[in-house]
Length: 577
Image 1 (cartoon, rainbow, N blue to C red):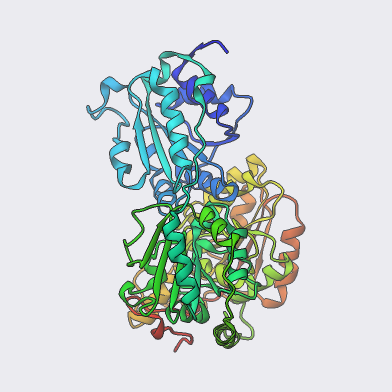
Image 2 (spheres, rainbow, N blue to C red):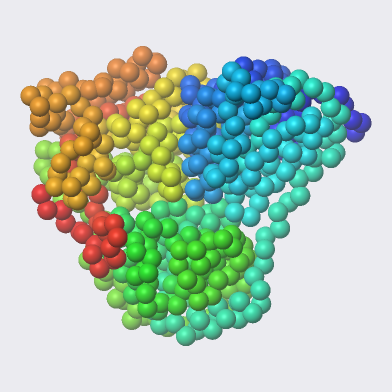
């Protein structure tokens, strides 16, 4: 194909088309007008206009998490670019492949503090995998190619491309034949590492396998389950690894860490061999790292060499693609009887499931999520915000496949849920996508209700409406003598929040159903437990987006909890009022 002469802005969009990008979350502005002019002429790319750049960043993030493809978001310079930062940081913390494209003031004006100029390269340097400032239009095709290669290769992550306005308006010679992305080749393990790994497995009596988000990113979930089955290994996951093994599997202990199961935490910490695959030993998993799995030999398999020995010393660190490691291990499995260890763990599972105290007359969030799981057959893609409802969503919904729980793990960004669900639905139009949110988290990007309607995105929304910043309030109750420090979202009556939620005569604040109706979205309030199944049924059967405002009274309910700075032996399973 002969070279063609294109503007820089047109070159960016042609590159996206050549790379197979079908959806871009883009918000226009002064330094991005040319990009949007080119986008508007694309016949291959769907442009979704969010109502806020942060919403667009989280939506592209949800799209990438749901599909496994590179998510793309764009914004103008200055405030537009800065509004992307939370989404960039979230992608960095959770290893989500994304390319962010920002408009920038003309290159000759950079550094002069002109209108809407921000050094977005400098601002985001600590939270990107790589960043690229385009200073010559001829470099654009190669820069775009590198951005997509870097975002998706190895440990995935965000890449930022900053394009000055004069570069967008300049012309260059474009040849699609020069845009070939070099497929990333999974790194195989060293033979000596695999031999040592096998010896450690053969000598272990009480092993524990931990699956992190890297297993899902590598597409290695089925291989990981086969590995566990052949070697008879109990399996725990991190929050990001949920779905890599079905919750119902006999070897699954669910997830471990601060709010994980007692069985998962015990198995990890009382093992003699702890195998971490695609996990990074973050503090919410380990608590005090020096006390975590203190008597176990540690095997750490990861594609990122900076993670090995960073938080926890590994007796064997394997720098390789987890899929390749599992392929080797599954080829010639070591059979070993571990019935006594598995029987002990089975008793822990039986004695300490995820549970909660039923309180008659109250609409409890945990019960809401269990009911939702039953009524959807555990088949929905769940996208929570951040807070108590996020932990309950991980605890009380039954997960069975990878990329089923899409959650802001490392960053823990409130406001993630609604826009990320929007992006997930754009990626998976045939799937049931449900945003489970809290009233605090939902209000941070509530404006994306408008995007759902305009773009025809059928997202179901369930707000656990307890008039509190629930997780922070829980910590206040447990560690700050119940003293409230600006965690009440409702209108205090007579200086007291008593009786606000859970009573039919109370006026909702805010009235999310009325707000949704202003966007043309149907919804309903749910005050009583006996209304719940009918309300969920209406939500599931109603075409298009639907909002349930569930008035769940505040209670300190995310249990178990390992208090910060403690180890698994300090786990709290009952809350003392």
